[in-house]
Image (tube, rainbow, N blue to C red; front, side, top):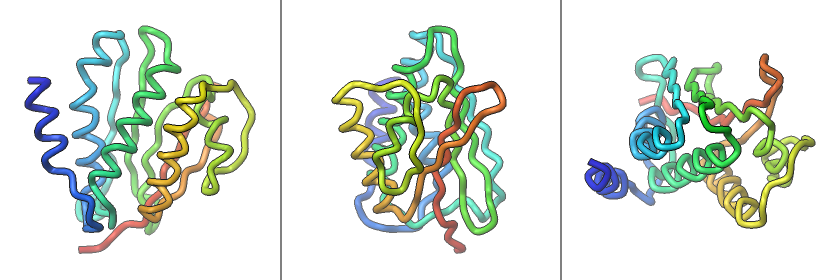
Length: 168
């Protein structure tokens, strides 16, 4: 099952700009890492609130899969065993927001160095994780998106990736 998921995940990835269903990219990535999450007793909650026909962005699916895989991996490293990673996809006017929970603000702090991100303060992460975040910032920018951080109701942080919607 894991090998089949890997094959499907990588074989459908394109490095050409094309209209893609961003919610499907997120769902495919979650499917790929679900067993890893279970092994670490991390619950993944994906709420897809995108309206039908308003779930497409112009992007490179291969890059976006890489982006979400890296972000989920980094968030897993920051989460405690038994925690939950909440991912919400929703429409926001002519944009699509993908919101990720960042309970202790680890990633939110380190996205401060990204040109598309607002500066924050919080815990510091390792050198390799900074490189991964730099790659994520580059992918977000290349796919016409930006990333924001905001306070969550539970005292943690939320990372919000925002991409322009493409009408088909």
